[in-house]
Length: 541
Image (cartoon, rainbow, N blue to C red; front, side, top):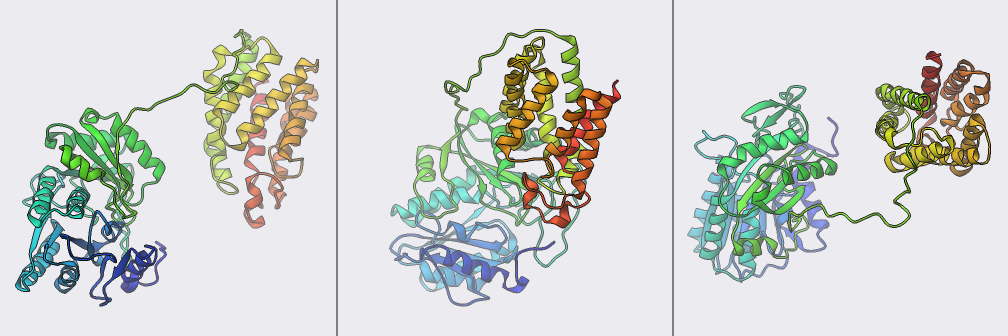
């Protein structure tokens, strides 16, 4: 898999330098590359308790992204998924620890425990006060003697960081950190493994499956489960968390493991808010990339039962850019549409012939969804079929409230329906088409003349004409031939659509951004949709 890196050996050092450069002077690093990779606050004066955390890289923005006022004092970074050395951890401790002491926040992995633990012993030999806490929030593997430390570590960073920033002593900060560790629980799910730079990607998750309870280093989970969408995925994760819930109100941390899109994470947020434990969750952190696993297409949920002091610590302002803040998990609040956007509904009326025609048109667009998407992927963003099929489904659902017996009002009602339910420029243009057809019908034009008037208005507003490689290349000749019957209109539409495959320079629509060689030999998807529509209608005769 191609990645934006230069070399595996310099990946982490170059990335950390990028983090420091982008911090606006808030961060610095210790000299000692490549073996000592420590990012620390530039404004640290050692008067307060220092917080040092870290571990293997590949979990960005953890850990360097959480260095700053109110959270970590320093992050000690290893290579990808590899614990930093004892010397690197010791360098971080010595660089930031004063009389107030230092708290090491360590995830429960053998390499981290050993290296941070030995560094703590060596630091104590220098006379420094050093405490260490071990985060073990993962509940995925109940039979594991020592649970892994995963995204719940962020609760500890934030709560301990708020207390340290406020001037609390080392014992108070360490006790608060341990209390957070005792309450935190986490579990994750992914649809794919991660891509470790310089290594072949492991392909262990079967098609149609998701892995539940996998680790942040790509370790296998407890089982592969059938993937049936976001709702079912969230339900499975919640089911594993429920037995471990504490009492009272909880904070949820919704973590993107690296490869899920913001759109997917928002859907998961909604499913969490509807889940079986929603009444126990009062606050939310995220959704955001917090403790990732490179590019893993998954998510994790961490929960923490909280008291007032912990909520205050989690809500305290911080400098690190990667912390998304604490928000109450609220209701979806709606407000009425402004005047002018709530349409006056026409009087519904029945007309079996018009209803059957609309139903047939909708069925044809729904049946063509996959083919049109595939065609659009060659010259656009691959959604023409879905856009038209979605509009068709919505129009089908609106049939009972349409004025089917009144052609003038029917055109206008279809235009209104499409303007509300069909996205993109296609929805706007078709809404204009039918609205203008309704106006023409009201002026006395017959149905063919009304449709031609609608097309003229679309051309005027959209700026496209025959030969520009749009749906007009099929629709204009089809309407011109319609007086000769459905078969003639279908042939004209097909000839017009096929001609677009020879137009290598689009002058309207999204295809204008596509290179000529990418367009040649492929029909415009809008024109193809028109051709299929007329061919399907002609076949009924």
